[in-house]
Length: 206
Length: 313
Image 1 (cartoon, rainbow over the protein chains, first blue to last red):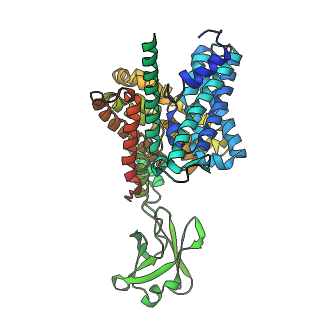
Image 2 (tube, rainbow over the protein chains, first blue to last red):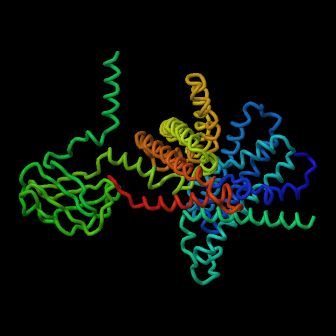
Image 3 (tube, rainbow over the protein chains, first blue to last red):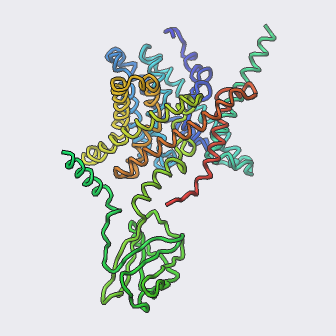
């Protein structure tokens, strides 16, 4: 990890090559639990995005003051503080959406992806790079949540963002909670398959 | 010294089981209980005037936390040769709540009130069973998935993880309950919930780590690696948050933590048994590893949906 990474590289790494949900398979709980609609995915994605960016910047700002031996507790406390802030803001300004997400907003504090980015990136790099790394990872999570929510909402209730697009309900099964496991599993397999096909094609060409 | 300790335990027992040792509210009522889905059975201490006891317009019944909503009766039948009465209701009763029954003019002027509730022990057990099976944290609440998929590859690892997990959960939930009841609520610091709970969990893990290393190095060698994973798990922080939401007392908290840990152990064990076999099975290459594990977990989740109507107590 060098300082010469461009903003584009930092962003694309979070969204594509190290996508937290599909590639790293971290923070799966909300991806399975509440991704029944696109809206839920967007809401939690945005919450995680802000917590990730703010925590990354905070840790990066104070990286010289934090003694290496207490770095994990200090990460945890930083994240917990920002999660509290987001939790209170959501509860105050969007009570409806907040009620739907239930306990998962508070559980952002235990998301492995955020701690991992702080440990691997923010505690070594400059504030600006950490900011863009946080943006990339947050967006990657948001994209993953929206993708799963899109599939489940379209197949489960035939709507996108509440608008009726299909006119009928293809498979009610997909809005059942347990379908989250199936959708995530099938999507992971799909991405693996694309990768295999892509590599084979490149291998033939070269 | 020995006797003193026993007395303390006895006293704690008496204090903690108020429901079991509850004295009868009135001398008139010998027994009362829920029966079926929409009945309350009452047994009087002596023979009563059957014309009054069998008159359903003299009864008013409501749930203790909703005194404004009176429940509609359809019949009051005299049983046990005038010593008992069975009240039938139009709607099924929610037997998890305490119901208050009041009878007008049964013995002289004025009403007699008494409460009908399930036995406290049964209620505690229902919390345990509910956290373990009906609301299994992994398969129906979707918590702790990172660790669940990470450590369910081998049966031995799964068992170790589950046991360590349950212990840490019990300790941290007890501490969180104490902090929540005696510090957060009295000083109005409820907004600090997340910060305090995550701090306590990390502390517990660190403490278990240190103690285990000194007391039982053999056990530490086999379980120590899992301890680090426990911090990054959402179940462990979900239990304090749930108990704070529901305002549980200590015994209820204990049962919830035990059920959550036991449920996690059960889920890990089931999953690891399947995954050990999956390794030698023929699966499409793009499904190898995590994708197939997710699909298996989905099937388990569907199976656990079957527990949703379970009611034991």
